Amino acid sequence: MLTQWLNSATRYLWRSVTEGARNVLTLRERRRAMMEARETRGITLLREWLSPMQRAQFDASKSFDVVGCDSEKRYRILYGKVTNVHEIDDDGQPVTGWCFVPSGYLVAGDVMLVQKIALETNERATLAVANPYKVLVPGRGPPAPQDARTSA
Amino acid sequence: MAVQIVMDQTGDTRHWFNPDDTEARSKAGKRFKSLTTIGYTAAVRDAAGKATVTRAFDPTAEETLFFPRLVGG
Image (tube, rainbow over all chains, first blue to last red; front, side, top):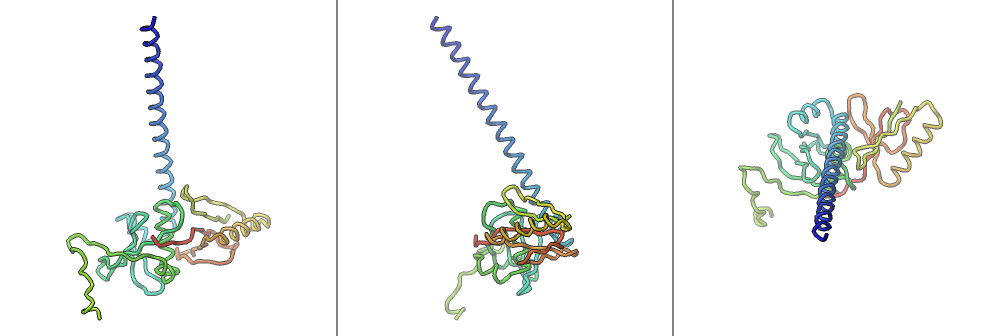
């Protein structure tokens, strides 16, 4: 009697666990699909607002260059949401990184579009809120430490 | 048809309106004001794709993009 009851309880428990696991997997799949749809919307909007040259560059390398409206310096905006804006020199090599983002949660395409518009329309104010950071280029080694005697 | 695009967690939300419809235009104007009041920046772009930040509602703009304020990362 007890063995029968135990068997039945185990079967019931096992069925519940497998059903629960299946539900979790379904929810995960659904969430992943939703996130992909959001990312795609962001990329679509970004591509709509890029100039033809920037769009071609983005399609080829997932990054594009913008020219600051005040200094006419060039910046490269890389695919991503943080630490993805590099000020670049004439050879296209990164000089300084600038970290600024729109507030709140936005997908990468939206963030990149905001960064582009900000630098192209209001560069000075944008850099005033941005945090600069050193960009490490592979093969170039870490940047030389600032020497007070040489910079004075 | 004109469109106001608001960046949000879903990617963006698009509000279409007929600029020739007085009521729709008024509603779009109110949306512009409420978004810019809470800190959104509005940008429009010309035919060549050049973006410009705008401070006033332009019912003739085919596409207006709203994005949240910038912060240092």
